[in-house]
Image (cartoon, rainbow, N blue to C red; front, side, top):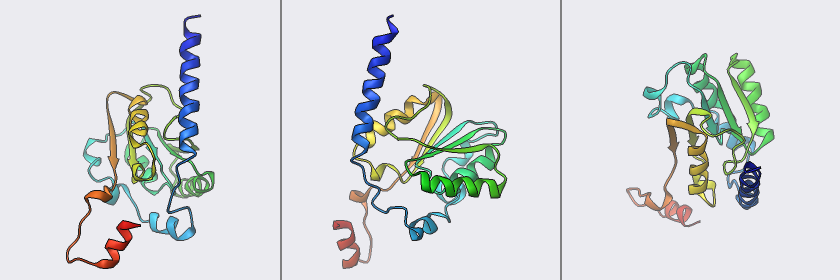
Length: 182
C-alpha cells in the first residue's frame, strides 16, 4: 500500500507537467517548408559531437525527433541497438515512420510523447538526445530533468540547441537584429 501514494504523486506530477506543455508552441510549425528544411539534418551534421560516444547496441531516445532524419541516421549507427524517436506531432511522426521504412531502419520506432512526461521507465535509455528542442519549451529545465530520469546511471543526455540571447554576428545586419528581437 505504500506504493499507492507514490504512484498517485507520479500521476499528479505527470498531469501537472502535461498541463504545462500545452502552453508550449512550436513556433516554426510543421509546414512542408519547415519539414523540408529539417530533412537535410543527419547525425553527422547535427549530432557530430555525440558520435564518438556511440557504440552498436546502444539504446537511444531522440526527443523532439520531427521528421526523423537524425533519428534514422543514429539508428543505422547503433544496430542492433533500439532507437526511439518521440515528438508531439503524430502527423510528422507518420512521415518519420515512412522514412524509416524506406531506409530499412528496423531498429527504430516513433511515438507521440511529451518532453515533460516521457512514457518510459527510469533509466530506460543509454543515451537521450535532443536537437533544437529546448528553445521551444517554456520550462527547458523540467524537460532536461525528465530526459535525465529516463537515462540510465552513467548514460548520456546530449542536447544541441540555440541560445538566442548569446547570438551575435558580424558585420552587423539590421534585419538579423529585427529577427532576434521578434
